[in-house]
Length: 419
Image (cartoon, rainbow, N blue to C red; front, side, top):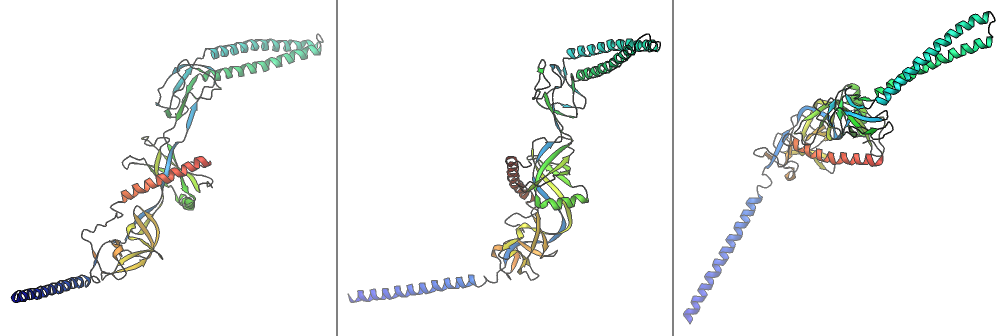
């Protein structure tokens, strides 16, 4: 028993010593690891992506949603009561000025013309007789063979017949004009729509439904509304010359139509705070179609020496906008900036930076003034940069503009404003 007790005591002492040694060693290792991790935290460089401030030509543009509208859309109607005899085109056909579209039954009008011509011949014969009577009565009244009253009556009859002949001539002209209405021609170059009158259809001059609508496709207009704040810039730019306008259709794979600004409305729509403007496009390939919605870009000017940085570099704080500028010793400083405008993923800087300055475009969340930085391998930011995703930004902006533009159009239609 005594030996057993001594053995247990020795085992307990050895176990306690081993546990104490393990805990002391493990706790010390954790502390050393924590100190090792914490020690370089204040001096370790933060990986970031930077870009230089560049000088380049940047256009000043107004991007919005527009609608294609024909310069002229003419409703072709009958001008006389008749029956359609022939239809000389097919629906959707493009026609030229003077092409015959319809011919109407002209027999009744031809008969009216012949009747008017016959009346003219009769009245001319009566006029010749009346003039002869006046000539004879003039000799007889000098010899007192007839009374002055008889002579005056003969003169009045001749004068009345002269008026009748003139009326007959006018009736003939009117009959010829009415007869010309039986041949309906195209008043301009354009594309025909749905034909509402087939061969044998009775048509009247009083009908409200047109026979067909002729729409001009070349040239064509694109109408769009711009906020009234841009009106001074538009008027100023118009004074310097021609303002280009481009229009692109969704799904057209980047193909755009080019035109020029042709019209600015005479007043601002007070309900929407916008003003209606129009661009005229040659539309030689008929890419623009009446009624379409298109992405419209109006270029006011091109700034040749604009200071630009990616939009991602600009941060917003309590005191306004700022950027992190990398100094020569690879530390950063906070620099307040003034952004004049943005374009295609770029911010145009009015003040605060100079050409060649390096600004941080990715990794700003881990920075503070004076922090050490290093360029991230590959130099690609986590988010998009101006050059890499300008197209993506443009598509997102186009979608937002589409929603905003349609909202404005809807407000204009419901509120009585220009659409």
